[in-house]
Each structure stands twice: as C-alpha cells, then as structure tokens.
Length: 403
Image (cartoon, rainbow, N blue to C red; front, side):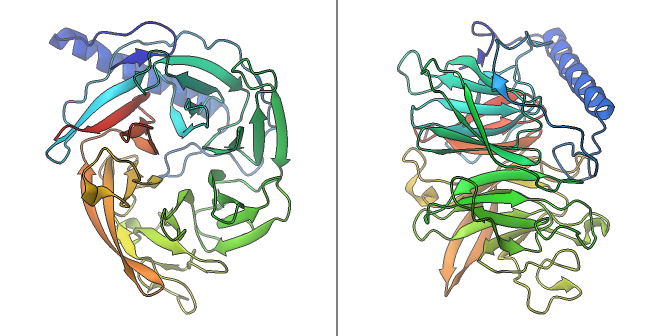
C-alpha cells in the first residue's frame, strides 16, 4: 500500500530508467533541504540525524492552524529492495512523499500524527476501514524543528526547539486550533529537546540534549531527561550525564524507563551509543565517562546495559506490545539506528531481547531490518505492524509478519 499525502495512490516504476530518475529526484530533494537548513544557520553534529540550532537561536515561530500542504517537488516511489528482514517478515511503503518525517504518534482517535522537520504536523486517517491510515491531511504548522509527539487524552504534545506545546482541536474539524506553550526557554545548541513520553506516574518526561559535543554545561538542564507535571509545572531533572537521548520508552510490564544515549563523537569509534536503564537521580557519565566504565571520572555513574555500534545515532525506541508478530517478540525493544553521515554505521533497526537481572536488565542486541537509509522513529500500528519513519527517503515503512 503506497499513498501520497497530496493525491491518489502512486504506482512504482519498473524500468531502470524510472529507478534512476527516482534516485536523482530524491537526491535533489535532499540537496534542496540541506541548502535551506544551512541558510537558516543550522549546524549538524557529525553523528546526529537532525540539523541543530546555533547557540544563539533566532526567534521561534508561533504554531498556527495549518493550510493545505504544498505539492512535493518529487513523486517518485521508494523501493524496498535491499532491506533484509528475518524470515516471515515483509516490509512495504505505507506513506510516501513526506518531507523529512521526525516523529509519529497514534492519537486516541486512531489517527496517525506525523511531524516533519519543516514544522508541519500531518494527520493520517483510515477512510476505508482496513485499520491503516490512507488519507493524509494537514493538522498544524509553524513549529521550529518538531522532534517529538505524544498524546495525553485528546491533547497532542509537541516537542520543538526550546519548547513544548499542547495542540488541541477545539472545534472538532480535524485541525489543530489551540496552542498552549507549557514549557519554554529550554537550552539548545548542538542539540535540543527531542522525544517526550508520559510515564506510569502520569508525569511528562522530556529528553534534552547537550549544547555541545563535550563540555561543562552552563544550564544544568542540558544533557538530561527532565520531568514535569502534564501542565509543564514542577520542573525537575530526572537523570543527567546523557549527551543526547533522542527517544525514551517505558517497559510495558514494570514501567522501567529506557533511553539511548548518543555518545560524544570526538573520540573516533571508541565511544559507543549506550542503551541505558534510566533511574531517578542517575548520572550516566557524559562528558567524561562512556560505555561500560570507559573514559574517566566513572565513579558513581551508571553503566549501560548494552553498547551499540559507535556513531550509529540511535533514535526511535519502541516496546513491541502488539499481537501480529510471533509471541517471542512480545516485550522486545526495537531501536532505529539512523547512522553516521558517512553511512558506515547504523542505518538499520535492531531488536533487543531483555532479561531481568535484579534491579536492572541484561540485553541481547540482534539486527532486525538492515539495508535501510535513515530510519528515525518507530510506532506501533493498531493492527500490530511496526511503522518506521525514514527521514531521508520521506516515507513511512510498514513491517508486517506474513509467516
């Protein structure tokens, strides 16, 4: 199933000529997007997926009720050739022609909400009753680099550069029309505030990257996971020493918080990406200590339960709780590895099998989907399939179990 958010279903080219044109169009789209970001004074870190602001950000735009999205500059479909999955699984393109999707969340209405780097929030709804989104419409726009989406009731929380906004649909027309900025003034530099999630305690948890690659931060909130009441009050630092956690996930059974720290990149391939069990008051070692007590000043820090490929840029996290995959996948953690800009690492989805050990876990990391381009975020569809947002391809893949 392949859909475009601006028009009818597209057919995939079958000749070498069409494939070549498709690849050239995708490269052109990426080149144009890169040029725009550079002109906006964005300065990406070598191993990070999202262009980051300078230390003196420009004024942030005010989100607005969205108008229809412009027609994309390319309509070429994306082939799944080269993506390898375990036997019994298949991958297909569900949504095409997006513009650098950064995050996804299903709302209580069953619709899929998608943020794009350009500041648009789109909504995809099921109009034919097959359980999958098949009509894409605008929801809101004007956000500055929205990287995280989460729902609490009917309210959509959007994490964008320096702030968190609650977006509501007061008149029920399917478009966001109320914007309550509950958190503002967050520090941002080399990184910004990324993913957010609600914990079993009802609190809002927000990841906040460092303003630098390796330094002593001026604002204690940088390189942390923050915690708030749902209205943005009672701000507290939940855990620190985390250079840049893009996403977080709570274990579906015991509520344990997991996060992937993307380590500093000035030490070559010596610094891994760390899978951490996040505890309140925990110090995870950045900038001096990394991996399983490597570096320096590791005393009193909490080591990771697994080291992932260095500079693989670990991003989206998802616990599989659906019923479509085989039973042995139930409760496993999936992680999207965007990969270094060089393309030599990551660019895949890994599966993590977790085994409880006392007050923590042991982890076994297994490749699940290899040969991808730039997977960034993951979400579980209502039918139990796994959706993957690919930032560079501008698509949402659907991974299904066929047996």
